[in-house]
Length: 64
Picture (cartoon, rainbow, N blue to C red):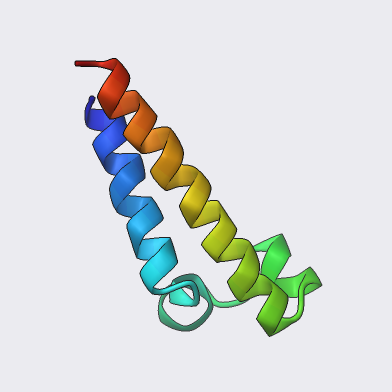
């Protein structure tokens, strides 16, 4: 359940601030940041956020 909640939180952050790693923390460390255009990188992070939210919600639901 804890892992599901953590994945949910990370997914929500990725959906709300998809440029969090590009502007806030590590700059140019991720391969996606180097290979994708800024517009595609935001799309990539939002899709990753949606996947994390779905998996996290499933883990929380399954652990009940």
